[in-house]
Length: 266
Image 1 (cartoon, rainbow, N blue to C red):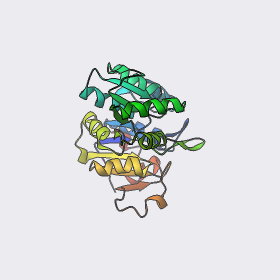
Image 2: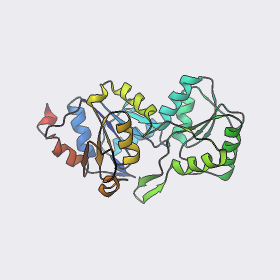
Image 3: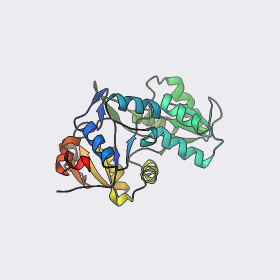
Image 4: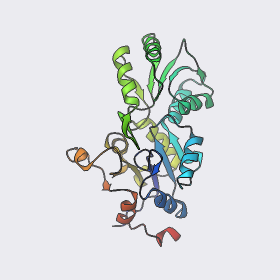
């Protein structure tokens, strides 16, 4: 089986690393992509990291990457808002990655009257933040979610994701948000454009069926589910839409697709 693609989208949490630990095959697969000169983009729903911080983290783990090879849901969110209103005022729940992405687009961060309420994972969330977001959404601000991940894989196991915050606000404000990250098409369309390869020749790799694999399926992109994070074989067995491929990890995928040490030198 020779499964060579011309471009790759690769998830981070649960696929490339788990917390601060590299996952089997991730470094070797990155080396293959570099040496074969195949375009790739690490694409993550995690909104907390800045692109610079992710580059530093990946570099420490032995993965060579530049900031333009990393797309976070925060960056995609900032791009989405700026395209609609480059002078938008944003009330933001989130961490450094989201705040910096919005600021880099010249958007105004505010605690009061807002055009958009933008919500990413915030591990210092308070009742007051949720109450103000609810008030502003009810007053007419557009509700934007970087993603709705229910949980995120860490070295301590699964921890609450942004979906928990979004669920609370959806109930309290009575409004469903515009969702930017996987599995929705907004970030995927941006990622396809950035990779510069026809989507028929791109493979989306991830550990979470509900986000990574659904994102590929909904955007008509082939998918590889790796069993290193969120979803198990049992989780996906009864799904009507199956991943194109399933592998234990990226090392197993390289073996399946006949990516060998010799092909890495070409």
